[in-house]
Length: 176
Length: 221
Image (cartoon, rainbow over all chains, first blue to last red; front, top):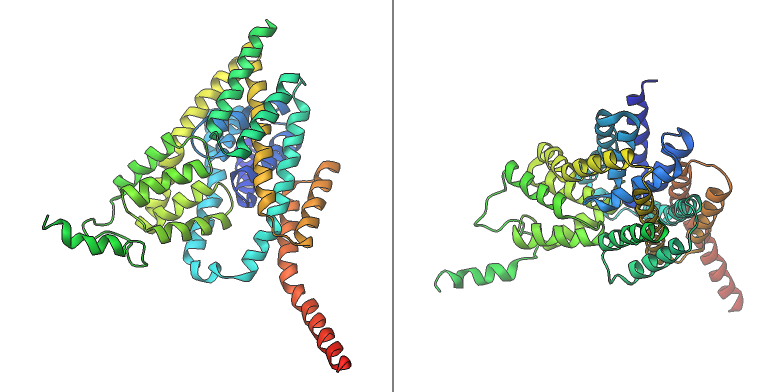
């Protein structure tokens, strides 16, 4: 199959099933880009997510990185359009049927069932991301520090990501 | 002073259902919407709730294109849609302001800055992938992302409804995801079905329980 169709199909699927916020898409992208197709190595996928955090805008923009890696600029375009189209379609429908959906017991119940699953699959993705990168002690320290600071909500996500990159660069100096 | 006074009650009314647009402003033009969305897409670092504050200050406080009440309703609605909360919210607001064309154009404007930046960064990263500094920076970044993901899971776990059904479906998803190479989409579907089944099945149980209780009471009497 044409690589562009493959990209479009994969990311449409991810966009449609990414319930529970942008972070919910990370495990879906990991499954599609690393495990199913082998488009990216695990550490490249880590970079894709990390760069998606460095940029303004949503996490889903990591799809652009994956598309770019697979098929250059056209690939980046296809992946980006594909991952955001389901969002737009669903928001259009939700807006249309707003009053019906709002107080609906079933929609609420479905979201209540989805939430724990999303938490679980994000945790799974975090574990496999942590497992694949080479283990240095400082990485464990960064993981713990970032998690603690992010939970306390004292530091913004953007600063935390920039800080952990700075630690990484410093560590390169230490090793060299 | 004369001009200030008649505005007082209007200010007090704001936040009510009908205070969607202040009277001195018509609906924004497509060009204006695109410009504001482009701005938010450029400075919206940090994701999630940080960006939610930015959107609120731009659209509700500064431009007053939507009311406080509607902003809250739309945020709740956006949480139901798949994908990033901010993209959903911004798309829904743009649709309210200017229909489907505004929705599409504004979303493109919102994503464009990140798109350009990440294509540039991807180019640099893929060209310098084996440079020890780039490698080490990425190792730091990946560790940071793992930390963020743990924090996200923590926040989500706190919002899980206190019900054995929700906890068991979460634990089942975790075990299945760790033990087998299962596509997470199936797990999400499983969660949704469990949630729906709970609503369909629970009335049966509660009815039976209620009947049993009333029966007991009668026996007791």
